[in-house]
Length: 219
Ligand SMILES: *Cc1c(COP(=O)(O)O)cnc(C)c1O
Image (cartoon, rainbow, N blue to C red):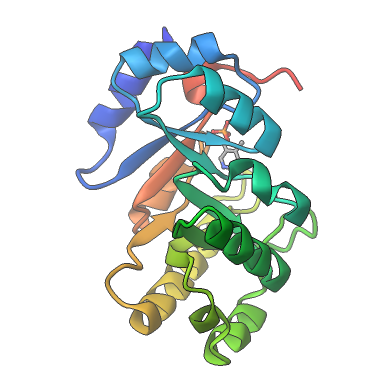
């Protein structure tokens, strides 16, 4: 199926109010243009330089979202234009985003990435450390960061019970943080090509879909 048909099909099946983030990492600008022509505007990338290079050549009404692990020394590449950083996963990174956003005179929307799986390889805050930082008022001193919600991934496994447990946990973290941060905290980003129908059952408001739309990635 073509990129455009995939986009239309997925969008039709999503409950209203759920946003589709098209994950275009490792795919060329031409593939993104096909999705763009089908009406897609929000794209997710995992590497800052690739994101910046695509931003420079593609239409300016695209919303670029950073979803991959972000090194502090690379925040500067995307700070001037990024629409959402989903991978805010440490205090050090928050400090750097605050600093770069202030330099650009912007407030940058961010999601906190929370680690809920047993896999060491996945990034994200441990929820207890995040809560400690939040309770100490860590984000209160960061006026150039606006926290919009939570991003997370489920364990990579065929065991559906484990995947459900991970999404349920992410939803609990989201709800607890929402009671702390209030109405602006409205995004629960979870679910990828293989598990998004399950994520939707647990209240996902944004699904991040790459391979189903664009095909397999050549790393
Ligand atoms: C690559 C990636 C996705 C998309 O994965 P697919 O399985 O291709 O849909 C979603 N979220 C994150 C954080 C990713 O790195």
